[in-house]
Structures are given as C-alpha cells and as structure tokens.
Image (cartoon, rainbow, N blue to C red; front, side):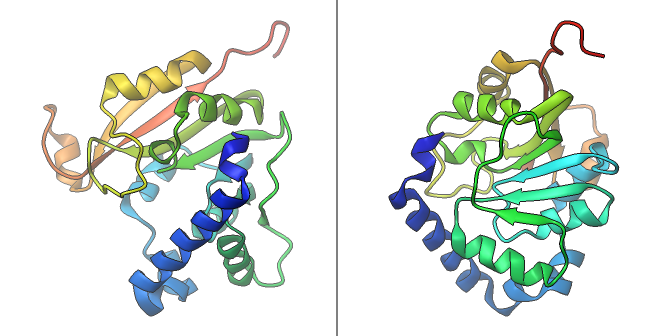
Amino acid sequence: MAAMRTAGAVEEYDRHYQEWVERQGPRALDLDWRMTHLLWRHRALLRRYSPEGRRVLDFGCMDGIFTLKLQGLGGEAVGYDISPAAIAQAKRFRGPAARPVFTTVPPGPGQFDRIYCQEVLEHVVDDVGLVGELVSYLASGGSVVGTTPVGENFWDPDHKRSYDEALLKRALAPWGRVRLHRYYRSPLRNFVPVRQRGAAVFIFEVTPPSPPGAR
C-alpha cells in the first residue's frame, strides 16, 4: 500500500487528525478521559479478541489510545500510522515508558500474532491489497481482526465505500478463513436473533492458512 504513504497522503492524514482534534475539543487530549471512554465498538472487539500474551499491531492507530489499551491488557503492542502528527501525540500520551512502540515506519513480515485494524478498510481504495499487506505482517498462526461500519454508519467524506456482508467478505476471503459478526451500538439489540436497523459495525477476523509443516 505504498500509495497510502506518499507525501500528499501523509499531509492529508495529518490534516484529518488535526481537524478531528479540533472537533472533539479539550477531551481529545485528555488521556484519562479517552482511556475510560473507549469507543463502544473497540470495547466489543477487545471482548472477542484479547491481546494478552501476544505481539500485537494496532494498524492505523491514530494517536494511540487503543494501542495503550492493548499494552495495558497484556499485549506487546506496536502502534502504526502514516500521520506524524498523530504519532507524535501518541508518544506524548505514552510518556517516558518504553512500551508501546509508536511508529510511522511500516513493520516487517512475520512479526505479529494479532493485528487490529479498526475503521481503516473503508478509507482505502484497494481494500483487498491492504488486507494482504496486513496478513504479511503475521507470524504463523496469527490473525487479523478489526471493525468496519455496516452500510453508511459513521459516514465520512473520506470513505471509499460502504460495506455489506458480501462486499466485506470479497475483501477478506482471498487471504484466509473469515469470521464476521454484526455488532450493534445498543447492546440489547445484539441479543435479538434478527437483523435490525441502527448503528452497527462488522467485527471481522481473517486467519490465513498455516504454512506446510507449521505447528
């Protein structure tokens, strides 16, 4: 996904991040508030996919709040984003601690047991290619997990598409076994066994096949 890392793209995502901070107001830079008000869809993802004891990558980490949560829950965490402004703020949030690592340098192959990718796929032109890139960063037996809005929930002008189940599977299936869950913002709706309207995300998992001879 080298096209995502051009100088123009870096400047664009710096601008997106700075505009987001301005929209959020003072709470955007309040670490304690951000950590205790983690987004509902991110909490749902963590309930399904714990980082504990794993080498984990938060791909598209923005200013690192979720990465810090992964580290706090027992992961050995790395946060990656192409926005230098967002990564600089992530390092300020982290303070003098050595972990988690925050970087604008793409990782190398085979480094992670689990990769978290949240609300990123809908922002890129080549979603199939991005999933393939993420899979390349996995160690044997690892998986890519994440979230993306259902339909036009949380619509942003930067979104390249809105996902239904078939379109999301098209992006994920070339790279391994796929699991999808539809998760609603209103918790009670998740206990009703019929498809409903309302704010929702897909929680997805892609597990590539293990190489021959791998344990």
